[in-house]
Image 1 (tube, each protein chain N blue to C red):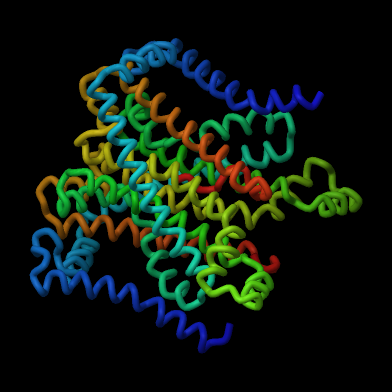
Image 2: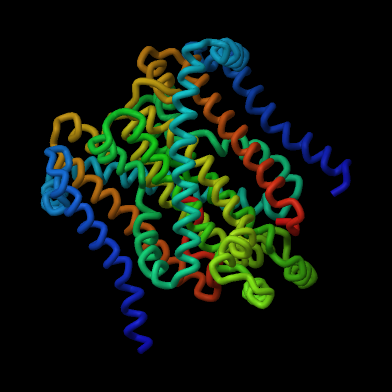
Length: 255
Length: 261
């Protein structure tokens, strides 16, 4: 794509975002929506900037991030291990596959009350929920990626004298890497969403709790701020993972 | 040999269900606390929920809202996705907007939308609609983008108008991908429904779960989890059977969509 086309694409893409913000402002300016229900964008973003500098709000972000990363990390480790194991061994596959078929379409959030009863109202239940939700995209994409590795690659490695045990880490894992990273990206955004929702359902801290507190006191501005924060976090983490992806996959053909 | 293997592959998910329930049963017996009933106790509580008039009405109301939200979401998202796939201008117009709304937790919009639209059906259905839209748009977009140009050129040469090409060429060839999106969307509709009801705590299946928990009726909590889980697995299996009939000619690349959340 040449630069000019790219530039016009970007300009075209900014239009609807500006339209949404413009409409939002217009609804307030022309009195269609009361400011108490729909605070104008300027005030929301000013409040966001103010809150980001606030120590209490920063603690909420820290609590949310801790749960998010803990749950996501467990999901990555479990998902890649199980996915590789299922792709490498038919015996494990025949056990894992039906279980995944049953558990993947199950709404994990319905398990949250059970997790609360089992693990308590602290960090553990939320981390477990994040893990349960992020696990399946990572597991499935690892499995699909690893089972679609070209047989010729494995044969060449064996012909070159690679021991059978090392093939998994030297051939299959790198070859499945693009697919695994796609799964991790989906899992990461899901983690962001789920940790926030879990905090909204029951919690005493974290960004989700900030939103619920604001809703109870009908502070519309403070309801928008945590929502925008978690969405920004999702976008930033997504971009970071994208950066990691292009670093890890340097030299790979375009994927 | 072949039929036996097929039978086994059909039975495998069922065996997995039984196995998971058995693990639950064993775990509950080992832990032996009031707040973690055994699988059998929870299963025994299922009929009493489904025969209780009030909770049945609650669950059916939830399902009705979910069906409407899903139907409207699909009806809006498929045409939009197809147009994005066929026109670069449309795609670059909508893509950035969709990209920044992707990480927004849709069910978390519930308190704000309730502030505007009240606690009625409209707010709850709107949230489900928002939850369904993105995956369906994305998959329709991918499907329409992958349509072979030559087929469209031949269609145009034979005198099909742009609209006719869209319906007779783009729609059928993107259908497998669209249905993958709808499958994800269906499970997401259920997830969004349950989550938003858990947050709003007004009515519906999600509310029953937490009400029972507040009142310490742990059998009901776990029975409700079984009901919601069965809904998710049941809807997904039913949609998969429907998809196989509709696009018998195309095997999906993956037998499970990557993202259900």
